[in-house]
Length: 399
Image (cartoon, rainbow, N blue to C red; front, side, top):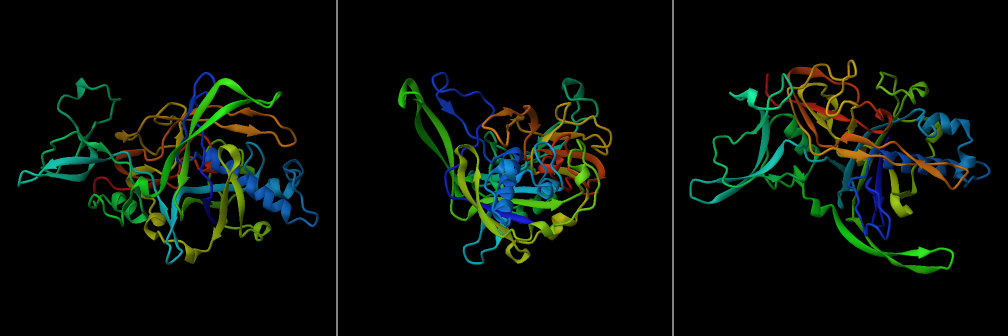
């Protein structure tokens, strides 16, 4: 089941940094939202739709989650029931064909390089980092068995400092990278600039005294909001597994189905997303409404691993859990860690509690191996049921 979520309001996805008006007057926002945020919004939306279809409609979440059939499908709290999120990406709808295409985070081993041309001009090209052994390996602090990542300049001379690659990849662009091929910088069929997807806006607010209904002196604050452009949104893929695995901390093999008959009523509807309960419209997509990606779905073997969503490992950048990685990687390109927590609501009450904060490798991280491996499960020690650790496998060195 593929769901397209299109926001109609500016969105707020708070970071894990403490924020209190009067002490720190600026609240940052994350983009894209974490799996924690999306799974909570989706499960709430599914529960609301479920309640509306009862013989006697239910609108109170506490009453809705008393239904055993619903809890069996989407779970409750940290039990995810049969729900399995198998894909989280951005998406864009073609205005003419109305088909939805997924957009993937930039792989961390790509950069924009500035090179000198034969006529003395400068050329901007996409450069990829590759594992390259160095003569003086004892001069590095790399773990044993690992090699550094160096830019593949293809015999050209880089004349300026490289720039981060922040664009989003189309399925064609990601498939090109997974096949160890290249595309031209600015190729619209392979990459999409962030400015075409969303705009960051600053909003001004002031703290209120609820007892007197007046403003508080010194409590002026700002926060970042993300306004997504028309026809852009989020794409979430859902499957349904075995109920008993809803609390399993490690990924397990199980029988999956794309639909369950109890949710056959689900077509489209409204949901709230992120801070301040901003409105978004969701729609269940038919197969003909999606841009096909046959190559990525059918590949399970390779020596290059790309993380499309964040992943958590208790030991840092790599897992020590048995069987998580078939072999140890020889190199990795990982941006700064991403702290992911959340807030757990308590149906039936106005309170809740903080979720544990975890340092995760961010989406776009890539791992290199010296021989081919097979990957069939998410790679994460937490949240594999809700979209953590979703990977795609490819080649960095044809063998």
